[in-house]
Amino acid sequence: MTKIVFSPLGGGLGNRLCGYINAKFLADTLSAASYIGWTVDKSCGCSFEEIYAPGQVIVEEGWDESTKSDPEKKYLYCIHKLEYAPPFIKEIDSSSLNKEVVECRLHPGPQQLQSFKSYDEIVLTTDHTWPFITLTTQSKILLQPELQEKIDTFRKQKEIDKSVIGIHIRQTDHLSQKPLEMYFSYIQSVLNKSPEQKFFVCSDSPDAEKEVQQRFPSSVIVYPKKHYAQKYDQDKRWTAHYPARWDSTEIPEGEFGAGGYNIVRSKESVLDAVMDLYLLSYTTVSPY
Image (cartoon, rainbow, N blue to C red; front, side, top):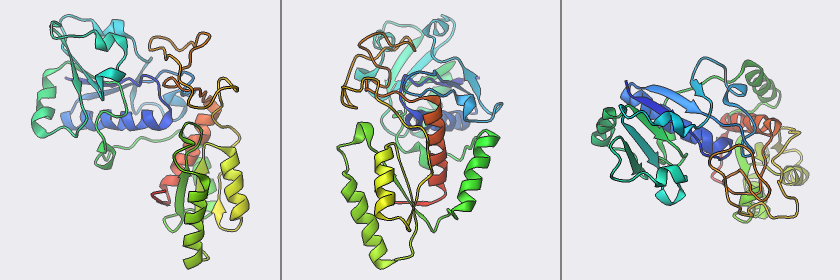
């Protein structure tokens, strides 16, 4: 049976979950075994099994290239762009008898999916493998019970459902993409038409959450997080780019582990982000 492995090479919670959904979709489509290699590092300081209930997914201890060298097996590495691949994938060339690399930027068609069955192991290394597969997969995995209970309790207390508009304000490494005033203008335009409208707003920035609550105290719901992503080097910008290590969870002096960005996400900040993510899923999410 073909084995599908998702091994995220860095990236935060959202990127990893998107990638896993891609892998699960492929496994379900091919009736294959599904595995996830989840390294706890500076980009995501929380293990898969600290978020999700055990026994649903076979979890491997992150990426180990030495396990992919069985000459009797045939391997396929699915990546978004070769230029973003780690060195050991870039070194695979046409002379390899049992390893192939394919750039997957579009949804795989039926013929390509069938061809995948000829491989013993398919390794997806990125969340960008197939865009928008998340819209078609029906696979679900259950959260750890205590996390789900916290989500349900807060959701019921604040009456969060599809009548509530959900807004995610991404800051930190996406700070320059959308200024806060854009979000505030949108909220105000909705309130001008529907004064009783409620919003659930979440952000990776405590300052953004504080400001939106101050602007719209009776209209905005925010989950009171205690932990957020932090800068590894406080003197550098969030998007300061440094060499990223592919082969270690340790970060030597001068190197950073979140896709090369100056970001550290602790276990507690990841679990708080899970709360935001799932609460947001109960709302009608705004395109903003």
